Structure formats: structure tokens, C-alpha cells
Length: 161
Image (cartoon, rainbow, N blue to C red):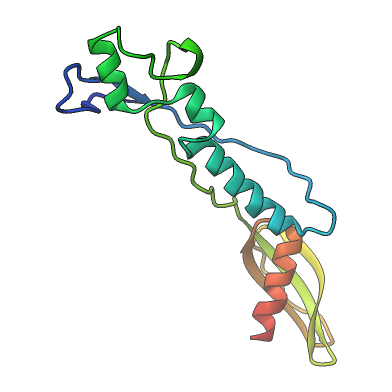
């Protein structure tokens, strides 16, 4: 969490002088619809989460969110209507954002051989390793990938280019 001491509202009768930024890493395990790829399910769920947490018309912000102007007006004159749903008294969400997190990658060494002019992988080892020797046109390369399967595909693509 980080504290923000800059006023969120400059010209309001009651300035919101302190705010705090809450950052959280949210992990969702998602099962795709039947026939849907994992990538499509991931992308769709990200958009749904982003809309849920950032759209003023959606449940999260309609329950816990308000604008700095509405909150300042309410704090200056408590006869004003409560700025959130159902009499919720705070803390209040003034802004929200959802950004994708790049997947963590690791180094992998992929070992294979050329068979019928195609790179055929035989094994993937986590980490970057020196490889030498072998018969039948061996090859080895190191790549950065999110997992061993992705490393194998990246290595094959790299060897073809």
C-alpha cells in the first residue's frame, strides 16, 4: 500500500486530503467453456474482471466506490445523500484500475536433432546449460519461456528461422 497525500479534489468545499493505494495480485483459476481455448478463456476472464472492478455501473464500484467530488460534498454537508449503496460508510474506492501481469519466464535449454530437415526436440531442461557432442545433426538452444512446453515450441521456431 502507498499513501497519497496530494488532495484528490482541489476546489471542493471539503478536500479529500489523504488516500491510500491498495495493490493486490489476484489469481484466478479458470476452466474454459467447452471447445474454448485456454488463451481465449484467459482473455475473456481478464476483460470480465477488469470491467467488474473498474466500471462505475458494475457491482464493485456501485457498492464501494464514489467520486472524490461526491465524497467531498457528503463530508462537507452530511445531509447530502450517502455517496455509496446501502449506507456503506467506507473506506471508499475513488479510482480503480486492472492491468495485466506479464507471466514469469524462466530459462530453458532445449536439446534435439534435425530429422528429415525438421528440428525435433528430445528434451527440455530448466536453466541455461552448455551442450556439446552427439551424432545425427544435434542441436541445442536456450530460450526464455513460461514453461517447458512453451520453451520446446519456441526452440523449434527458433531453429526453423
